[in-house]
Image 1 (cartoon, rainbow, N blue to C red):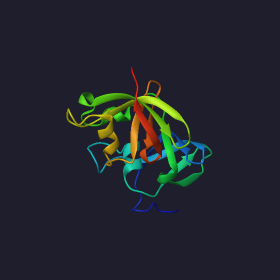
Image 2 (cartoon, rainbow, N blue to C red; image 1 turned 180 degrees about the horizontal axis):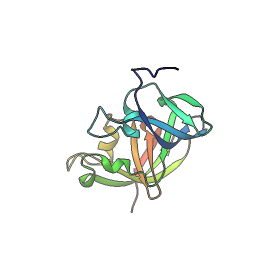
Image 3 (cartoon, rainbow, N blue to C red; image 1 turned 120 degrees about the horizontal axis):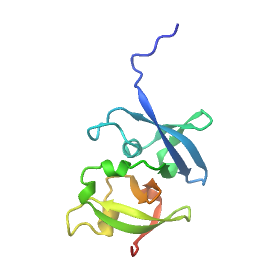
Image 4 (cartoon, rainbow, N blue to C red; image 1 turned 90 degrees about the horizontal axis):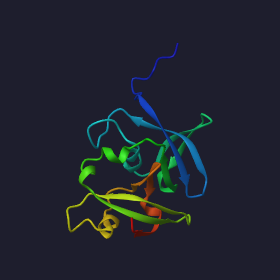
Amino acid sequence: MARMSEFRVQKRREAAELTLTTGATMAGFLFLSGASAAHAGPERVGDLLNLEPGFFPFEAGTGETALVNRAHVLKVALPAPVIEAQLDAGYDVATRRLVKMLLTSGESLTGTVMIYSPPGRDRLSDYCADAGERFRYLEQPDRTLLINAAHIVALSEVEG
């Protein structure tokens, strides 16, 4: 009978759909820790993606697990009703901007971004200048996306 390694870390699975820079999409599951090093509570998809450069495990719907390079992930779609972005400290007081994003794939997305900066430093240009997170939330009415900022070609504010 095989023994479980003492180094094994229990993870929970979170459904997601990855869109890669190749144009391929992968539906399946990310593996998240029960605790986050960045904040109180469990690890979130945004934590996993912004943790470090390199690869992360992703289980495809077929049950096969692949290591996926973060740099080649264009966007990650979280199914409704995932409200991960709303768990960020300051979400309720953040400045909201309705934006249109043009991605390197040619896809254009519209949604809301949150800017966590004090008044006067809460412009869209301030959002763009923030180099703190590689993957950023874009909230849409039916889902939440995490967009790889390295693949945003243009960002503009739209009238709501």
